[in-house]
Length: 374
Image 1: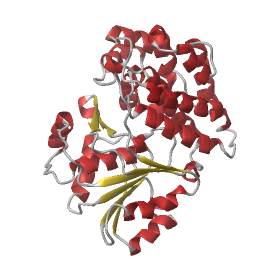
Image 2: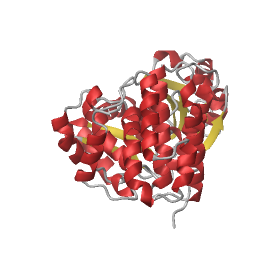
Image 3: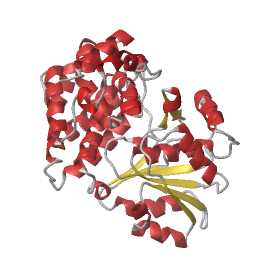
Image 4: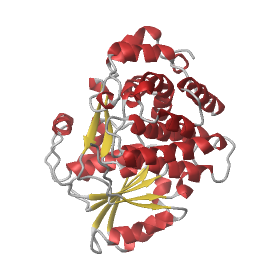
């Protein structure tokens, strides 16, 4: 029997970012140490952060990389470990969230090299984090602000690593749709489809439960019901995406993801296909394979607004095409003779084995072939 657990305080709404100071006040005393990790210099200039300097000892770091690597995480740890913050504020997309929550697990440990960091990640013996963190997303898709794991890439070893600890949920998630309104359309669409994938995979995951399934269906309806308005710039579109993203995050924070995410990792790592795009292309063929093992399958189809997995595939391709995003592996420059290698790399422990149907290299290869030149 599976259970649901998520301790993150979620503050949602336009202007929610103004609650950050009161949240910090509840964690540390005046003059306490706060590390702010942002994705660009402009973010540091927001009024709410400027006002923190009068109350706390503040240090800011700008992390501009997408898909953070072990080496990049180690460099940031080395740069900030002596400062030893009591609170880390992550304001940005999933990459910023991932490095922020990872740092909280590593502070207080003596780590002398990326290889030592790899060992600690593999052993997952993090203990109680030395710092608390607050997530302030500026994209709508990852849901990272409400999960306790972080994706750290290791392209030199052809693996995706996960920093995860149930002691490392955020103290709070501050979801302010105002912060997402300037997202480029391609990023907004790809991110929204990542949220859809989180929700769908949470719904059919082996670890699903009655609460996660209800959250998942709600997230799917919210995002898929309004995603078509993103390219047109509809005023409330970003608010719906933010709502759907955090709801999907709450769903899969309890269940983890499944085969779609597992298969997508090498596509992003080797070809730079944006994560949300990569995983969205895989949803329909994986759903078709899983269909007979999905509890209350019709409710999922209804939430998606489709009658079959094939119809979902067409719908996703149309969404990507409208946003001028390539929707096949061939269009992303993947060579067909490399599909067997990608299939071999597509089995990730904790994701592939969380799928309701067993996926082998042969199964994955058939899925990759299906989306190669659609």
